[in-house]
Amino acid sequence: MKNFNIKPLLLLFAIVFVFSSCSSDDPVPENEEELITDVTLIFTELDENNNPIGTPLEFKASDSQGLELGSSPTIETIALNTGKKYLLEIELFNSVENEDITEEILEEADEHQFFFLGTAFISSPVLTYTYDDEDLNGNPVGLRGFVQVSPAPGFNNAQFRLILRHDLNKDFTGANNPNWENFVQAGGETDLDITFPLVLNP
Image (cartoon, rainbow, N blue to C red; front, top):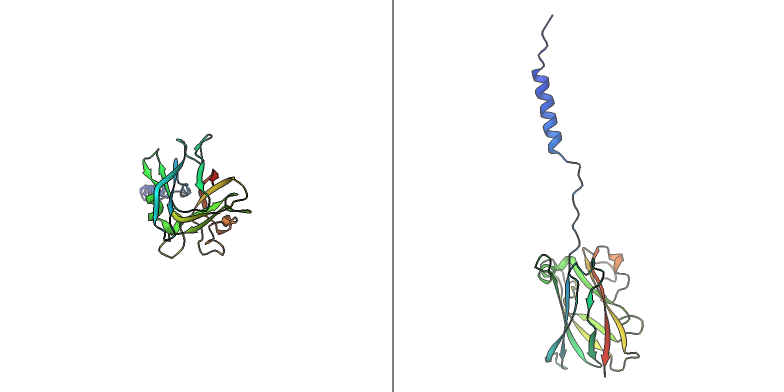
């Protein structure tokens, strides 16, 4: 009777076990939405030649847990003058990680875009927004743009809704419209969706 040597068989089992352990069936984690705790809207009045006038106006929204996560964000009321044109610049910050989200959006400009909705821009608009920045592909971003205030708005109180989308298809029909209500059709995820109250001074 021949002796059966089990050493090669054990070695084979060991190799199979090692390779099986190295491979993982765990799903690859998806990119999480940006954590944004602070948003600052900076309005600088412009003259007819788009030169800045006076001191910029700043209006902020903040929540230490994140504006998409917190239950009671602090949101200031935007106050602008009728008939004026402003340069609007947006700054975003993550105080939890001490990160400047504005810089991150600039670095990944082709993946981000702001939309401007709410009653201030839709239906009976009192504001008109025009993008003044673009990514390397020539598509809008929205960290910088122009806001024209109606000279004779039909009402004084409105809602300024600010949306930041990530990983959208900017070539989708309608995506270059800053007031596009169907922005979800271009895909992507929402990093920010916040509404500021708006009042207009005569």
